[in-house]
Length: 158
Ligand SMILES: Nc1ncnc2c1ncn2[C@@H]1O[C@H](COP(=O)(O)OP(=O)(O)OP(=O)(O)O)[C@@H](O)[C@H]1O
Ligand SMILES: O=C(O)[C@H](O)[C@@H](O)[C@H](O)[C@H](O)CO
Image 1: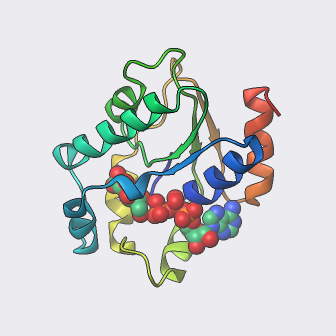
Image 2: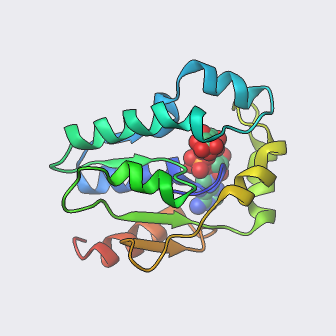
């Protein structure tokens, strides 16, 4: 989890490969209208995100044996939706690089639908995981491999 440009896809993909389990790129499950809205520079709202979170929760139910999902999961209520019906609940890893790093990464991307102008709303929407959530917060600006190692150690399955 994390705002746009935080490195979710990069880290999640490496983590899934290391664990030999399926990876779901959360962005691929957005309804086309959501992608169009972001491309037009408009932030998504709770209503826009509802069908997307439902689809991700479906994927997680279908991969109860193990899977890794990249999803912004910015608000507590979104994470509650993602956890719905899953026991044990999924672990979350927040990638939280400094703003300057996010800006640099977003500015460097050419082919991506997400404009850098949406970074403010992404950061304003982010609610940090609370104590009762099974969540790890990483600075998010080191090498992806090191973050995967820290995650595996935290999960105690490395
Ligand atoms: N640890 C890292 N160190 C340096 N660059 C990184 C790192 N992680 C990701 N990047 C680069 O930053 C950009 C954003 O990464 P990535 O697509 O993984 O983020 P994301 O959170 O999935 O973003 P979005 O949700 O907007 O697609 C990419 O160009 C990627 O190559
Ligand atoms: O909840 C959201 O606003 C969205 O998921 C965004 O975070 C983007 O999909 C993603 O980060 C791609 O840039």
